[in-house]
Image 1: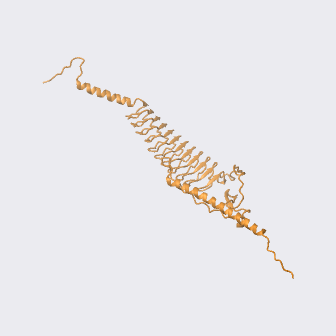
Image 2: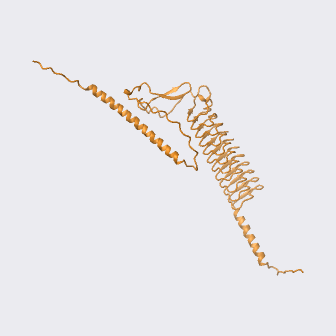
Image 3: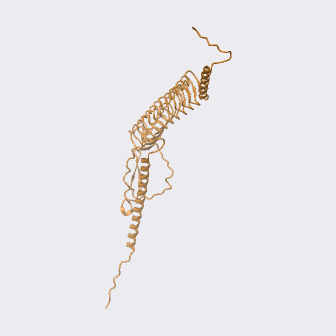
Length: 356
C-alpha cells in the first residue's frame, strides 16, 4: 500500500529546510575562503581550502595548495605541489614545482624546481638552483647558476653557470660568467671575474679578483690572488696601485719587516731588511706564521654559533697581546740604547799623585 504525503503549496518540510540551510552556509564558507584567490587555467588552485590571496595562472599552477597564502604562480606546473607554503613567487614552467617552504622567488623555467623545504631563496634564470632541496638564503642570478646546489646555504652566484656544480658548500660569493664553475664542497670563497677560480673544488677561504684568476693553480685554501700570473696570460697585471700606504711610515724593526715579491710567481713575503738585522738595532723576530684558519659552519637561521663568536674574541685578544709584546720589546731596546749612551758619556776617574 502506497502512502502519499501532500504539502501545501509554498511550504517546505522542516528537515528539508535545515539541510538546505547547512548547504548554503557551507557554500558561503568555501566562497569566503576563496574570495581573495585568483586562478586561470586547468587544475589551477584546484585544492584550495583556507589559503587566501593566492594567484595562479597556468595549467596545474598551485594545484595542491590548500592552506598556503600570498603565493603567485605563473606558468604551467609552477608551485604545483605546494600545499602550505606561503609568500612564494614562481614565474616560469615548473618553477618551484614541488616547493612547500616560505619566502622563495623563482623566475625562469625550472628555477628552484626541486626545492622542498629550503626557504628565502632567490633564483633568476633558466635552471637556476634547479636541484636545490633544503638550502636556504641563497641568491642565484643567471642561466644554470647554482644549478646543482642541494643543501648549501648563504651562497651568492651571479653569472652564467656561476657556482653551477656547488652542492653542499656555503658562504660563497661568485660574480662572473663561469665563476667557480667546478666548486663542489668548498666554502667561504669570494671570487670576482669571468672564469675565475675554475680549479676550486673543496678549497675554502680564498679570495680571487680578476678574470680567469686561478686558472693555472690547483685547488687551494686561504689564498688571496688579485690579477696574478695564475690567470694564464703570461704576465698577470702589469701595474699595481693601492691607496692608504704612502702616508703610513713604519720604520723597519720590532714587528715591522720588509715586504718581498717573488718575481717568478708574484707571491708576496717578508724579510727583516737591511735596517734591522741584529738585536742591537732593536730587531726582534716576528711571530711565527699564523695557523691555517678553520672552515666555519654554515649559518643557521641567520645566526653564527656561539663557538665561532668565542673564537673571534680569542683571536682579537691574541692580536692585542702580540701588539703589546712588540711595543714592550721596542721599549726595552730603546732603554738599552739609552743606557749604552750613558755609559759612554761617563767621565773616567782621575788619579792625583802627591808630590813630596
